[in-house]
Image 1 (tube, rainbow over the protein chains, first blue to last red):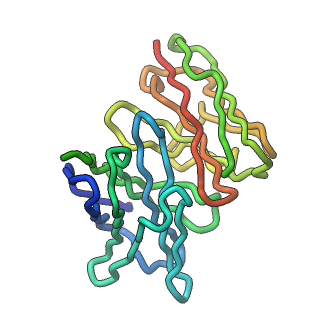
Image 2: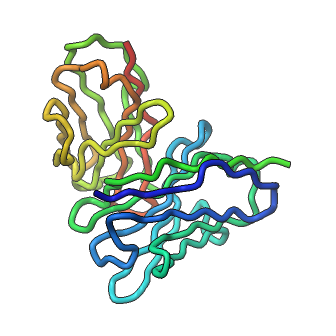
Length: 123
Length: 106
């Protein structure tokens, strides 16, 4: 059984950088059989896929154009986790941020989700 | 980006009702279509992937169909725990985009 763990609440000032981590239990961030995703949800933007990282003999990542240039998703094999960094924050980045796993062989569906981290961007 | 629309945006139903939610993509996504259920205060839960494959552990009253641009999620007999918001998601091309959701309440 895969479990993903995230921290609870984050308050960040505008223009600063958001850093979130997702701890993985029951699978490996370096697995060739999965991709590791960040997704956020807000009342104004709905559910928004932000990006992913995955290992296929080397590390790859993909990002949504809406946040490209501001986002970095990194794996940490020593801690079996992956992280999200989002810089130049504005109040429009206020949202619930979820991490999720997509198994290989399907349709990139997210079958396991973290509980979410509520991020508020405000001074 | 591929745009996803859903209809209806909300509906009222009763326990035992059969209901269908429609999802439409702005271009063909073959069968790269997933359905999720979200209850208040919880993360989304995967119901259907690849348009019609039932996720392990999901009751068989849930079913999905469609290909190309038009897809449906059907619940054959609504149960009290099914009152929630349902989202479709295309995973044919990046960025993977979600529909706006369909809220099902009593």
